[in-house]
Image (cartoon, rainbow, N blue to C red; front, top):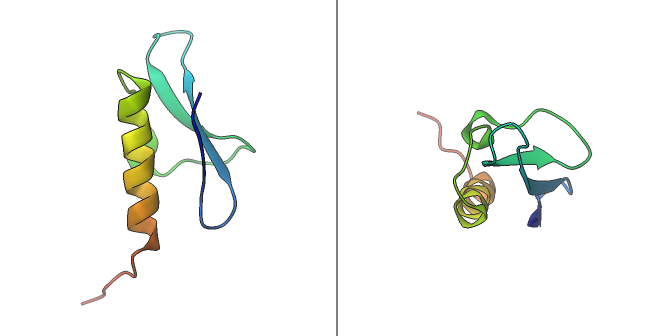
Length: 65
């Protein structure tokens, strides 16, 4: 399965959910995932894209109104 590292050093990985045979995302060391990554994915590639997008967006400074 694919593994990524967040800017804070936590590993994020994809895995196949045995109950549904879909892909899911988890923190390897444990912890609560952001809502945007908590769904089911139909392929590892789609899950990897979601993780990459999340990591890219988390690098961006947040603009407040």
